[in-house]
Length: 323
Image 1: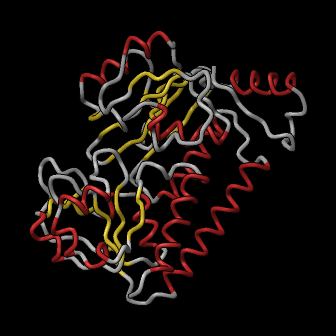
Image 2: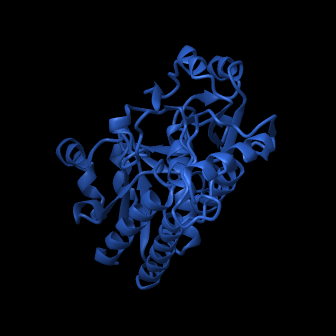
């Protein structure tokens, strides 16, 4: 079952018995939620068994909602979105993109399947809504998809709204503290950006090509731009298989000269050490050669603690960067 964790200072959670009664009352009230697709998800009771993508789970667990199963792009131990979270008692139902064990999901008897809703009508971690996998999962339980096409700062609020409807208290002492730390980090980042007029950055996910992000398709990059950071894009057209990136050839990497490089840390992006050893034109990017590089993990921005850590790292990198 989903566990709703109540802080010691929360009203209505003075004892385990009170918490159980509160959860039972909420569950019996029914459930209706307009999700990121614009669809209204209606259930007879508040979901008590949830299977979620790793990104959705990373948002919900710190808010007190624990799924019974999670799928992701790797094992729990290797998952960046799930890093630092208590996953005890939660089943892994998929450890590669688009590879989810439908029978295992069915065995968990979920009331709802929660994931992100991405550009191109795709569900987070599994692919198109029209795929056979999505259709098979829909036979197990309805989807509830939270939009992943907004700035991350808005997505944080969307997950808080969902968690509230699921019966969680999102104003516990711990969550309020995390929210305050996040707000302070955002203020510090804005100050760091303002202190470096002319600063530019580029977000990349290098591998066989020097893939440059299409900034408006990444929730945290939209935040960074809203907070004053100038992000460079390439003028190369998007390829059919390049997703939210444009495929710049390695020979042309040096055509783009930002002050700071945001380097994708996900598993399919080439690590920095390999870039330095195996890609001679990496050194043609002066910011890279100077070490003006910040880690960038687009999947790790759905809870306050994780996003705050990334914002702090970016602020530190900006402080060290010479324009």
